Image (cartoon, rainbow, N blue to C red):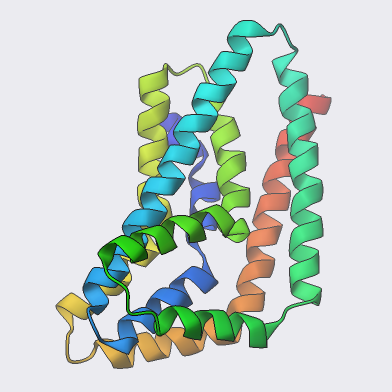
Length: 223
C-alpha cells in the first residue's frame, strides 16, 4: 500500500497546492471572528467530501469490473488521453482568460460570511466539489489507485493518506494562528501576497507536472 501511495504522491502534492482555496482560508482567518472554528469547519468539509469522492469512485469501478468484461488497460489509456485533453483545455483557458476581479470578489465574499460551523462545513464541501484545480490531479490519482491489485481496504487507506496530504496546506493555516496568535496576521498577509503574485507561475508548474505524468502513463499504453 505504501508503495502505491508513494507512486501517486506527486499528484497528491499537485492537488494540495491550491492557491485559491488557501487564499479563501487566509481571508477567513484574517477576518477574526470565530476564525479558527470557521476555518476548521471549511477544511473538514473539504476533506470529507474529497474522501467520499474517492470511496464512491472505488465502489463504482469495482461494480463495473465485476459486471462488464472490458479491456481495462485500454479503457485506462483512453481515460488518460481524455484527462490530458481536459487538463490542457482547462488550464489553458484559465491562464488566458483569468478574471482576477471576479476571483477577488469571491474571496472577499467568503471572508465576510458570518455563519456557524455547519454552514462552513457545507462551504468546504461545495468548494471541494467545484475546485477543478485540485479535482483534476485527484481524479487521475484515484484512477491509478482504483486499478492497482490492492484490496478495497488498502485502497481506501491509500485514499485516506492522500487526503491528508491534500489538506495539509489548509490545516497548517489555522495552526499558524494557534501557535503564533500575535504574529499570525502578519504571517498570513505575507503568504497572501506571495500567492497572489505567483498564482500563474504555480498553475503553470502544476500543469507541466500533470501533463508529463499523463504522457508517461500514455506512453506505457502505446508500447
